[in-house]
Length: 404
Ligand code: BES
Ligand code: ZN
Picture (cartoon, protein in one colour):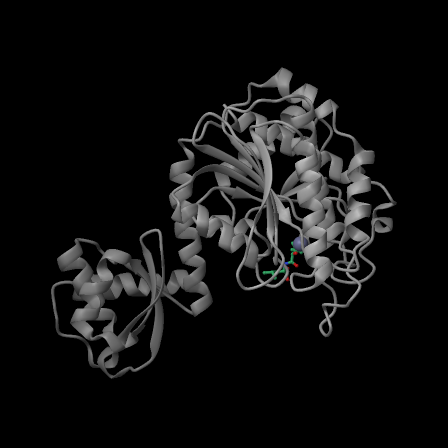
């Protein structure tokens, strides 16, 4: 539908590019429409039609979402053509949601271009293979069990804070006495649960990140006191991240780039923690070359083992992760699917302009139906972390191959 409408706009823009006279149908229509347009054109357009008729709603990576009067489409086309030398130059959308989707995919295109600069070669065979061999399913299982033993890990509850402090001390234990490794809290002002970050500092300014949310949730009322073990969603992701950190640190791996491991706060209530972290990295101009989101890794619901979510992620990096699986995890089957919305923290990194991927435990349609209930326990995965172990191996390959 958006496509048809865009064509219509292009036709209108061509027909009236050299003619300021508008047809009466357009003049008389007062319907408001959503458009995306280059951010550089916003001021001129507002000047020409008035601030009230052209309201800017969001801006990202040079693209602006705005609401304009349908009757101003002609004026917009004219402006774009005469002053900005663009034919068309903007896209009209059927709904606000469509416009925001375009804003995200516009950003995606930009990252895809940038991603050409990221080295996606696979040539660290010896290092990756020996790291993969050290993945210990039993240790991952015990992390899942420990995290799901908290009553809940809700972002506003005391056990939500305690469980994140447990992750902090676990990660600091792994860092041990190394002077280049340390875990710390990224505090949030609006709620008590911190995001936890473990960094292994490298020589360069580049950063490679693996992360997942540490919080859990169940029910609608009294969430502070509800039983929310969140074994799959997302103790499994945190156990996966913890195991990657353990293998790298215990093997004495010294990185070129900074490796960061993140347990985000408050994902279940709208990606709140990761949004603040990603925006902080963006504001500081940090050079994040890749982000891997691990959210739900231990429920083997599909024929495929690992399913790459293709929306709100970076296509070039997704393909790289697929190649890593083919190369290092023979027998592990992978494919693509979509969440259909900004379903987890990878979307926060995508919005901040960084390449992110979200390898998931199953196809969306085969997902674990017990998440967000008191039944999300490790028994739904036969009491093992076998499925999550595949993700730990993939994430090790991701970090080591990007770290060069
Ligand atoms: N782990 C889920 C996301 C998920 C669920 C991905 C099922 C794929 C399949 C995540 O913790 C979650 O619940 N996200 C929310 C959205 C968020 C913005 C509050 C959701 O999916 O409703
Ligand atoms: Zn989750």
